[in-house]
Length: 343
Image (cartoon, rainbow, N blue to C red; front, top):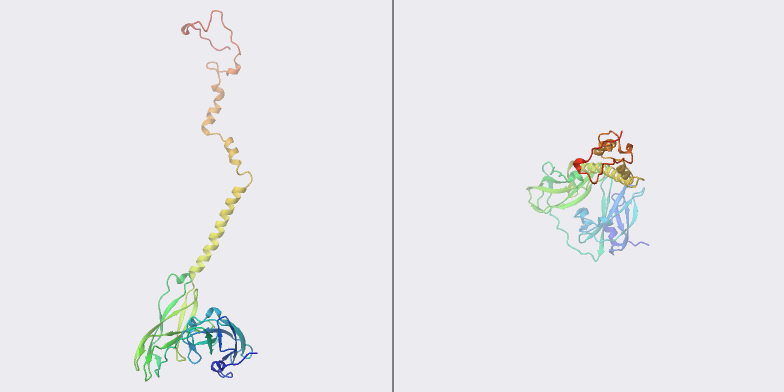
């Protein structure tokens, strides 16, 4: 059985007109679990639930989604009547409390609702002081300054500076105003981030303000940058982001180089393991005869012939008749008769 706490009244607006949320518990420690109920939302709408610090239901999340535990958020879709019920874990936000359970639409028209929540054991810090009765208005056309570097071509987050001039039309100075910068892509609702500008704008004076704007890594297409102050949209600026062609080129080269390398490695392995590939060179080496020995082999029968006869030694008789007056051992070389081959 879920109990109802005073936090529900603080975080719930008129269910018939505006979206609202209620919590099963107003306080819980890290690792616990709470149940979030909603009503008055658009039917069949995707919502995101986050626990955020430095926030109250009346002032919202001052630091934007950077003040929320984004990794532990939960998504929920409303029913046909615009209600929902979803459990979510309790986790500590990256900034001190006061904390809220922040619920916002993901697609379509932007809508948010906050319910006060205490994260037990989490530090608490005072919120920035609100400005007085000053009223800011944009006096000149907003513009986006900056350029994309080479890393953006390879998928790095695109970033720009939103430059605009505001004037204080109120009767009191405005000190350290907090603006909300939203980026929207296609049919999706803007993702708002609160940024505080340090300085004081006196009554009747103006100031030029620069706020950083950054998209997610790999973002491309047509975006819309919106500026909001005091719940009112002051300006909108289109932003066309080019496609990161470096990433596409990388994948194309990867699909070409890797298959080619695998093919070459496979062919080398086939040459190594192919049957008879190691014995073939040896046989070829034995059959091969150097060119300079070919002529010698062809002339070998002629070299074996006995000089002066034109016949080979095989045709000569095996024995030779020795004349009675010829003694090879006793005759001097100059008296030895000269014998020619037999016919």
